Image (cartoon, rainbow, N blue to C red; front, side, top):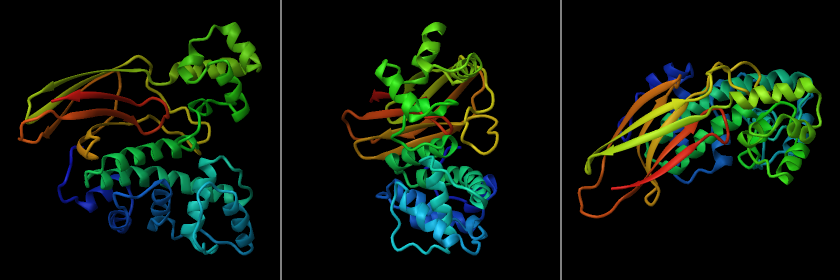
Length: 314
């Protein structure tokens, strides 16, 4: 989808993601260029899809305790507000704080809905040309899928991994899934200290992480066309996401061109990648003489640590 600074058809976006037009309008009126991660989660939880989230007798005390241990603060929370509950359950998922009882089922519904809602939010935000906020919202997509905060290691996307095991890996200079995949089997077993079945499971997951080679060619100086070729090494399959409450059949990607100096998003396109794809992004550069620096971003909606970016100059 190519769009930028054009009147959005909220009905089309709502239909694409199977959410209400009221929600899209709320996103559009609530988000500003200064919105931070906390604000994004609050706006996400304000979606009308969460209005029917049940508030059961006696849950108020559970919500108070939960909110007290979450990474982002609430201002004067109403513990019987379903939107506050949605925000709390979403944050609990991101920081991997356990919920119990009926909250488990409520959290499942919140996460499944949030997956669609945050992708719609990307469409709304990118139409305003806000580069950094669009990129942050794409990262929220990854966070929701993986049950991670932005500061967490990408190794936590693997099954059986804990913070303690991540620290152990980092002490051995294993920072990424790709570092782990390149280890010899014997060294991997010694490091992980798990059963053979678990080690093999982790190895399979490492080998499934998307490895994508990107090449691009820039044509033109005012009416600019960026031609991108994408080649995937690994097989396409269901997303590896042990914390996701269901099966996500495949990951999606965005290609974005932006001017970081002015924080302006110039072009965006959604990509579903199989083995090989060719994609073209067009944008108009300023007519005034001078040097302009741009960045090409390749962002995933499901995995942390697989994004790419490239700088180019006109």
